[in-house]
Length: 101
Image 1 (cartoon, rainbow, N blue to C red):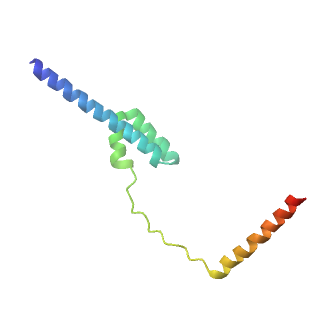
Image 2: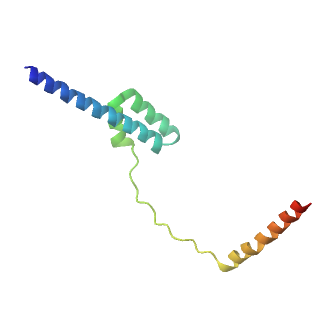
């Protein structure tokens, strides 16, 4: 009988620790992923409903993982690039004249 009680208490402690870790994970997830009024609403749900609120948020509130868009290099036209290069030395020259005074 004593061994059975020890086993039950051990299982209870493990489940309780896992539930607390899951609740903290969902709490942090709400803060990181949600914005605006959704953040406030989900924080209330997770805080006041505890583990039940965390489970609700996990299945209903977490944004789905969307594939990241492929980044392509921006093509810069040659005339614009030379225009920017030509304008920069003129600005530096004006600043250097102001520093000499």
